[in-house]
Amino acid sequence: MSDQLYTAERRKGFDQSKKKSETLDSVLAKGKGLKRLLPFIGPAFIASVAYIDPGNFATNIQAGSQYGYMLLWVILLSNIMAIVIQSLSAKLGIATGQNLPEVSRDHFPFWASVLLWIQGELMIMATDLAEFIGAALGLTLLFGIPMLPSALITAVASFIILELQRKGVRLLEAVIACMVFVVVIAFSVQVIFAQPALQPLVAGLTIPHFQGVNSILLAAGILGATVMPHAIYLHSALTQKRIVGNNEEQRIKIFKFEFIDILIAMLIAGVINGAMLIVASALFHSHGLVIEDLDVAFKQFGHLMGPIAAILFAVGLLSAGLSSSSVGTLSGDVIMQGYIRKRIPVYLRRFITMIPPLLIIILGVNPTHALVLSQVVLSFGIAFALIPLIVFTSRKSLMGQLVNRKATTLAAWLIAFIIIALNLFLLYQTIFGS
Image (cartoon, rainbow, N blue to C red; front, side):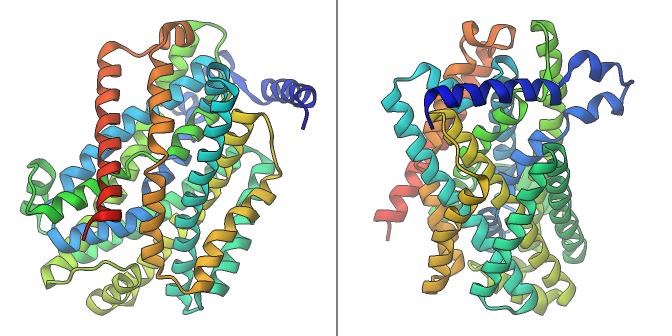
């Protein structure tokens, strides 16, 4: 696609977005309370899916089964990090009217944008690998269907979810939010069934501590997977023209409303991750079982708590996988358009990103091992999204009154250092560790 054609399409897209977007004045005129808040709810829920993908299932189940409630505080810390990072991403879209790849393209040389696009596409493939395999595994556990037919059914279901985007992003947000709540309900019921002990639960949540090197590695796995690159890219795109502010004051108000969306969505994601670890602790750790494979966890849920608990686990895994795969595809579209000003049909993108997980399933690779591999690949892309995000949101010339405060910038750099260091540490352990 030529630059002239792209420019014409982008101008047309801007005109359409103005028609579809609401101004802050029109939103505030709708009433008070919930009526004012509802138009802002949605972007963070889509981004939060990255924090409850099938890779998180594997890490949380293993952490709870091996160390009980001890690492609950790590989940709490990772949730705080998520709130900070996603708020920066949302703020960038609101302040600039552009998403992170678009801003990067405007400030980096062309060759850098091309390299960033290539690494971004690799990150999306790794993301889709985790989500696609997770959803297929969920179907296999639920209905006993072999993995390959389950993967094909997952493919059809993911196309159906993407079709909702043609009817408006708000409908897609609503469907994904519903799927997130399915995961919430599934693990909430499991927590009730598991009857966790309150005192050690509170201690694990409030007293940071470790027990040997392996517990540190698991904590690094939880923290290192906190921020997914595609969630950063996509969140800035979802807020860039959602509600339009005519001046600095209005954009500040918009961000305050969107921050409520972030708090709610990240709180829900944190509760889900915590519930996974709590259930694994109360059920598996108390019986001396260390669970590293999701299919083994499914069988043990059925053995220790009955078929309903096992079904809830599989339904939660399926719902998380399907919603996450759709979000990954949308993120890929944002990355290509932003960095190199080109687009391919979203259905073609979905088809291309299905190929690696389908090959892995055909080759008979262990699904849980494939999920771990995808997390290792994703560790390469964290810095390429996180560092530019912090740099750009710290520039007053770019952000105006929404520029980061010094304390926010300091906290963001500290979070970035921790996350990047832990990902490098995990990468080293995966490649060279015994």
